[in-house]
Length: 158
Image (spheres, one colour):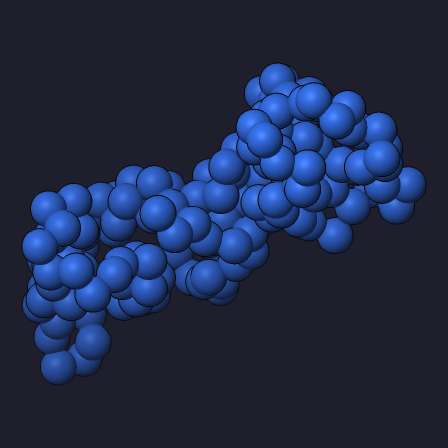
């Protein structure tokens, strides 16, 4: 499954009318071309719903409740594509900035893997997730698979 990158996808608005297309476009970007995928079919229906919310000639939503409900459904769907340990939602410091974020308490409360200051500290026989935090505070999440000597980068934040 494709996952999102950390960062903003929408800012400066909390209006459902403004968020529908942006959220639908973002969700669509994660879908494959496989029309037979049942899970993706549900997402495609949601995207179609978002694009079919009726508007007046002035650009106002004719069915505000429907728009709000669809935005909430898109919100939940997008959260399914958040990077590991991340979430989709409003930025903690700006309620009108939506995107994919790492919780403020990460990694203190929800990471059980190996934490290292340098990747040379990873034991040769270690298998699992590795969180590398360098001296500048940049963090990278790696995975090391059984039988592999290589670290596979999952994501990084600078």
